[in-house]
Length: 345
Image 1: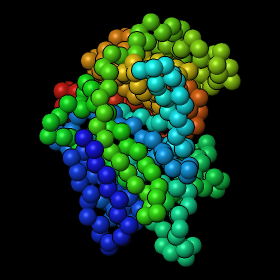
Image 2: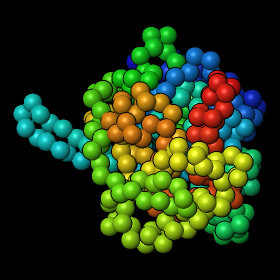
Image 3: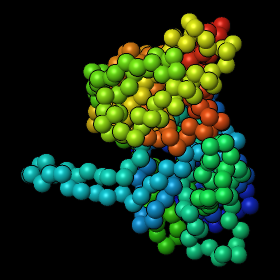
């Protein structure tokens, strides 16, 4: 199954580029659609988990963002031009590998945009849409406020929002992956979206070694590689513990609830399909034992909170105030374990 769409006109309110595999916008349509909320993430009733891979076949350095339900742009992952290398030249066994492909584990209805730091071929005096609040991304200082340094303007050039197919099959099992390829031609940027089969054998990391630590009175499992790969992170662990001890509301997560949720801290963590694993980013609450098993991780992580890459936490720890990102995930744990009817409430 394949779909391509490339439009160069810019209507006042662009029509949605619907197809079997989702909604696609490019060039002026993408910028206009985002400006009026047509590229926001949607809460679809029949949505299931899905994996989407993005690869950049242009010579431009692009930026990939997840679009929130309010239209705000998040994460701002760098998507460099994809580099292809030959991995084998045997007769009947020619193979290639691509470096720079970004894979997102997401949900049907969740939208993504691709952008450049500057508009290509646009007069400097011409209007360039910047998304509300997140169009200009600023580095945060220790107070959690945006500082004056590092402003980054993003010009949206393409957008994609996956939808369930009538045939199904690309949901929780991860048997299918949406492969989104961006190219650049005379008429501007172009998106090609395909459904690709994936091997379902998981990457087995269930025996990965962790050290038991107590940080701020909180039970923690730390990746053995953490201290050798990121020696400068050791002082951050102590501060991390102080943060957890000081920021958890007294009425919400004191003993024995404090000991009910293990926190796992990784130097790095990959999971999912063995042939195309996902590199973990940010933090998450593990609320599904089935997902843990399908991802190849130890079942002990069920019910815990995991920080997939410790070095990235240092960049995000002041979002929502000091310790806010960790408190956010622990709130999911509290909701799942101690609120009546859990996530159904």
